[in-house]
Length: 259
Image (cartoon, rainbow, N blue to C red; front, top):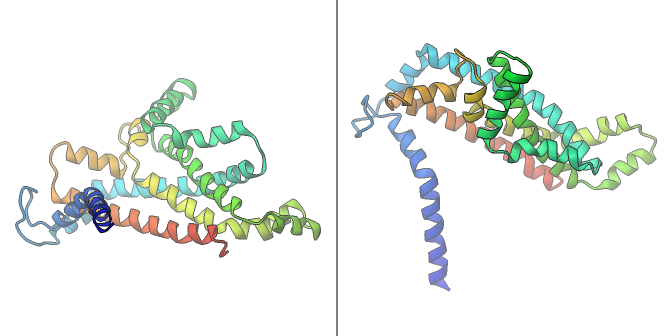
C-alpha cells in the first residue's frame, strides 16, 4: 500500500517537474547578467530595463493587449448569448457551430480563416483580420463556461419568475444575468488569456507589418534567445497565471451555487 502511494507521489512529482521546471528556468534566466543563456553569471534587473525601453516590443505588447481586450469583450457578449441558446434549445447545429472552433486544430482554423478573408471577403490582412479571428475561437470557450453555469442552476428559479409575471427580458435582467455574471467574467478572462498569447491563428491572419507579442517573440528567438526574451516571457506568464486564477475564482463559486 505504502509503496504504491510513494509511486503515485513520485509519478506526480515527475509530471509536475516536466511541466513547470522549464518555466522556472525561463524565469530564473530572465535575471541572468549575461547576453547568452549558456550559463548563470549573476543576478540583474538589466533585461527588464531593456524591455521597458524596447519600442518594438512595447508596440507589439500594446497590439496584443488591444486585440485581447476587444475580442474578449465581444466574445463574452456573443458567447453568453450562444451559451443561453444552447442551454434553452435542443438545436444540434447551433451547438456544433459554436463548439467547432474550440475542437478544431488551430492550424486548420488559421488556414481556413486566411482563405476566407482573401478569397471570399477580399479583406486586407491586418489588425481587423486578427481581431475577427480571435473573436471566432473565443466565443466557444465563453459559451462552454456559461452553458455549464446555467446547467448548475435550479430551473424552478426561472419558473418562479415567470409565475410572478416577469417577462422574458425581466427574467433575464433580474434573475438570469446576476446568476451567470460570474461565469461571464470567468469566460471573458479565459478568452482574454487565450487571445493575448495566441500564435498560430494570429500567424496566419496577421498582415505585413502587424506585430503582436507572440509574433514578435517568435521573430526574436529565430536569431538568438536573449534574457530579454526570458523577461517578456516571464511577464506574459505572470499575466496569464493571474487571469487563470481570477477565472478559477469565479467559475467554481458559480458551479457551487454561491451566487
